[in-house]
Amino acid sequence: MPLDIVIVYGSVRSARQGIKLARFLVRQVEARGHAAHLLDPLELRLPLLDRMYKEYPDGEAPAPLEEVAAYLRRADGFLIVSGEYNHGIPPALKNLLDHFLEEWFWRPSAIACYSAGTFGGVRAAVQLRATLAELGMPSIPSLYPVAKIGAQFDEDGTAREKAHERRVGRFLDELEWYANALRAARSGGVPY
Image (cartoon, rainbow, N blue to C red; front, side, top):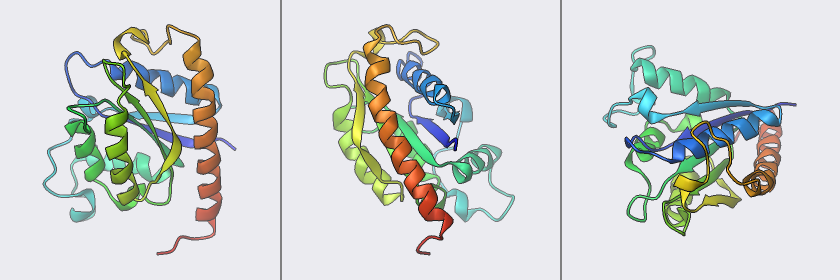
C-alpha cells in the first residue's frame, strides 16, 4: 500500500544546494510508488515562531500553517533534509518544525543531511535526532549523509553519481518499514 511521505527541507539561503538533495529524494520516493510532498520554507514563508499552530483558534492560523498542517496530518512518515549551520540545525528548519507538535506524532522520521565539506552534515543530524524525538517522530537508525553537496546533484535533483541511487535504497527501505509498522499501530489507536 502506498505511503504518504512529507519531505521537509530546511534552508532559505539564496545559494542553497540542499534543495537538489530534497528534489532527489522526492523523485526516489515517487519512484517507489509513494506520494511525496516537499515542504520548502522558502516557498512557505512561515513567520518566525510566535504562536504554535495549535495555539490559534480553529480557522484563524495563517494560511501557510493551515497548508502545512494538512500535509502533516496525512503523512505516514517524514524525511527531514538538513544542512549543517555552525555544527547545528538551520534556523528555517527549526522554525518550521517548532510551529507544530501533535501533527508530527506517531510517525517515523528519517534524516538526510548534507554539508559543503566532508562530514555530510552529521553534526547537525545528531542534534536533530533529539528534536525529532521530542516532537514525537523518532528518527530511524540510518542517516543519509551527503558530503560536498554542491557537486552531487543537478538542479532538478538528478544524481551525478549512480552511487546515490544505490545508497538511498537501503535508507528508504528502512523508512518504509517504520512507516508501515507505525501506520498499522496507529490504526489500532494511540496512547492519548
